[in-house]
Length: 100
Image 1 (cartoon, rainbow, N blue to C red):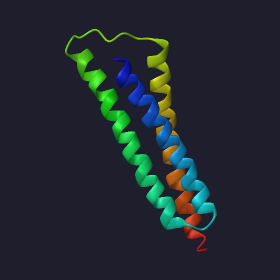
Image 2: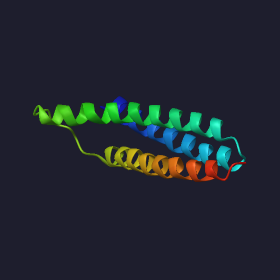
Image 3: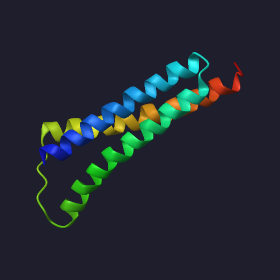
């Protein structure tokens, strides 16, 4: 269980950081690099979501999934990462339209 929770936290954190780097790259005019960073962020979110889905499926099967503060923290990480990634995608496209 701890490995799954840590996978969510680590990948969520990676996605958040990579999304913020994408915004910085776009601000610098490196739109292609920014878009690559967003692809990396999407991959990290996919890995976090895969771990999260495993927990959901286990609970749906009737397996007891213990709710802990660390589990709540992991869920917070993935949701925050997804929000930041969504905003980063919009910001990168807005900056791309400025035609550096």
